Length: 85
Image 1 (cartoon, rainbow, N blue to C red):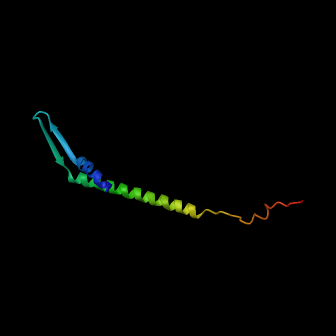
Image 2 (tube, helix red, strand yellow):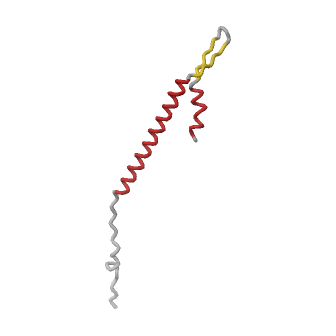
Image 3 (cartoon, rainbow, N blue to C red):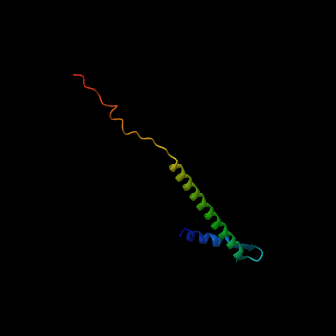
C-alpha cells in the first residue's frame, strides 16, 4: 500500500524536462526505461530491507533461545528461623 504513495514521485523522476529559452519552449518527455530502473531499485531496496529485518528477528530469536536461567525454588528450608523460647 505504501508503494502507491511513491508512484507519483516515481513517475516524476522518469520525466525529463528541457527548456529552449530562445524559442520560449519547454519539452517534457517520459522515459520508460528510467521509470523501470527506478522501480527496480525501489523493489531491490524493499527486498534488502525485508531480509535485514528477517535476519535481525532470527538473531533475536536465537539469542532468546540461548538464555539459561537457573531457578532454585527449594530455599524455604534455609530461610526458616528457629524459635528458642
